[in-house]
Length: 337
Ligand SMILES: [Zn+2]
Image: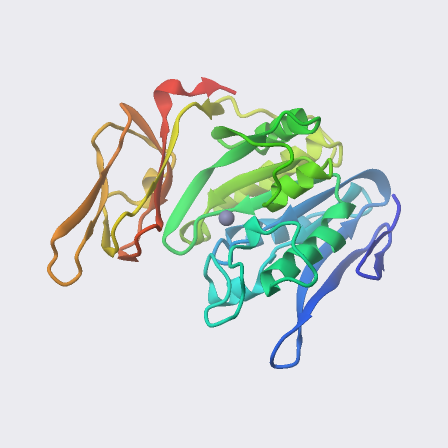
């Protein structure tokens, strides 16, 4: 395996090293950095990127990435794994999806500004650092997303543009092993997210949406996530053994993203134990009421005869109009993957 040089730091075969990519000088005088945890194997093979935290509150995969990297043996690994657990350290600090409370920035959502710009807003500069010092090293990427503090999610988003990389994206996405895949048609030349930029560079990306803060204490979800990475690595030939298939895996035909249309106090009617479950049409899942008068503002119910609860908001709290509420899948139109 060849050595890999990231931001001027070389990681040699057999090494396990942290590399810091400088982004910008912060007001207090220190440097905003992105930290890559790199394991380079002794044997030839592809370079896999494991990246999360483009949305600051989607922190679940930090555990997955470190669990995978901590378990790798560079003497037997074929290829290399480059972990980037915190793509947006500013949003991670505030533990918010978006960047920059009180900051002057033109863009707040890191995952819509790729490839970024060295002379753009701070968020664009983070994207530029990822685009120039991280992505070009990769042969494949897993882009992790999850719920935040109040939600949890469980599916894999498969972007299919018809580009030469599309079949590999589908193959690796299946290998991650989620019960549900949702296939989204995208334009090959439209790039705004990290996964789309990767595709435009010929790098297949799996967009894995799994867990949330609430599942971080659930060892089964962590184990599934780690097993998904290991299975992708087997397809890539980085780990020994044949990849396995999830016999329950299905492609969802119809998927419905529901946002809250009015702000207020949110009262859940189902808990996170129902994540991934199928419930009948009309099942109440939550409501929003006026916090002062307790007037009922919105009621959410399962929309399909057999509704898969793909994303759940499950914690009592306040919501804004426009916040994500649920993602529902139609089990009747789901087909075996
Ligand atoms: Zn996200």
